[in-house]
Amino acid sequence: MTTAVLAVQGAFAEHEAKLAKLGEKVVELRQAADLDQPFDRLVLPGGESTTQGKLLAELGMLEAMRERIAAGMPTLATCAGLILLARRLDAHDDKGTPRLATLDVLVQRNAYGRQLGSFHTNLQFKGLGEVPATFIRAPFVMEAGADVDVLAAHEGRIVAVRQGGQIGLAFHPELDADPRVHELFLSL
Ligand code: GLN
Image (cartoon, rainbow, N blue to C red; front, side, top):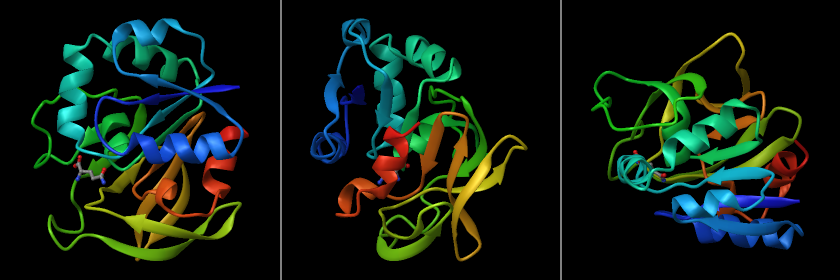
C-alpha cells in the first residue's frame, strides 16, 4: 500500500522514515500534480498550520484533499495536521485561514503556551495501552462531535481522536521509536 505524506512544510521527513520502516511505500505531496498519482492513505504532519493551510490553498490542493478525506481515505494528522482537519477552531485562533475542516472537533491552538509548551509524557491510548507522546506547542481538542471517538486524553484534555478513517493527534508519534500508532493507521 502507498501513503502520501503532505510535504509542503513541517515535520514530514520523520513520518516518511517511520512509514518506510514499517514497509509502507511513501510518496510526497508537494504540488497539485502529485495528487494524480495513486495512493491509499494520507499523512498530514506537524509544523505551522497557518502556513500549511495557506500553501494548500495557493497550490490548489485543498479541495482535492478534502474530497478524498471526506470520501473515507485513511488520514493520520499530527499537531498542525489536526488543526488543518478541525471543523472548528477556538474563536481566538480562527483567522479564517483555509483548512480541510473534515473532522468534527473544536480545537484550540498552542494550548500549552507558545514557548514552554513542549514536553514528553506517556498516554493511555485506546486499544494500544500506554504510548509515549511528545507534545510541541500542541493544540488540544476542546469538543468532539458525536461521531468522534476519543482515543487519548492528557490531564483531562482530549489529545487523540478518530472519526471514520481520520485519526487526529495533538502529539508527534513520528518522533518516538514506538511504532504502534503508525501501525494502527496502516491497519485502517
Ligand atoms: N503550534 C503549531 C500550529 O498552531 C502546531 C505545532 C506542531 O505542529 N508541532 O500550527
